[in-house]
Length: 225
Image (cartoon, rainbow, N blue to C red; front, side, top):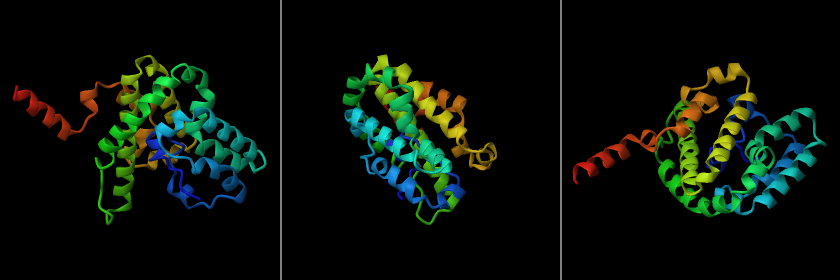
């Protein structure tokens, strides 16, 4: 089964950050059957928000399917589909009134955030497991902040619900992992499960969240005027 560590998570579509033990566990046939349609979806905000009802219907079908699985599989399904659940269930009504604007803004956000975050924390293939995990977590943090900023800028009236969905995902991730497992994570990954930290990152002025290289370029440009 494809891994649903949503580093792609539609870049911010975070199901759950797996511990190494969870990654090694083989999913049951029942869980695979229920998750497969969701896993095969196009992982982009453009697709999700332009096909919102279809995606949410698929989540509902998957949840119904998971009822036939074991309690443990149902728990995993709940965790792995966090992004969809947050958007399609928890905040569906609030999102609906802004859906048209978000859907239009999503395409540009996909391009901007992939370009900004894809290589921002790139490591060599020969890098250690710890370095690769740090890179993944920093990339996910970059993407989460970037998408929030881009969508909120184009759809300012949706900023509150966009903040709620992001914080909701962080909270759900933290709730789904044992506190001791979170403590053992690299600091860069532990931050992704800290609602206070992520709230500050999301609400920080744009200049505070861009890379040092970008800051230097902006500062240099200012001096040239």
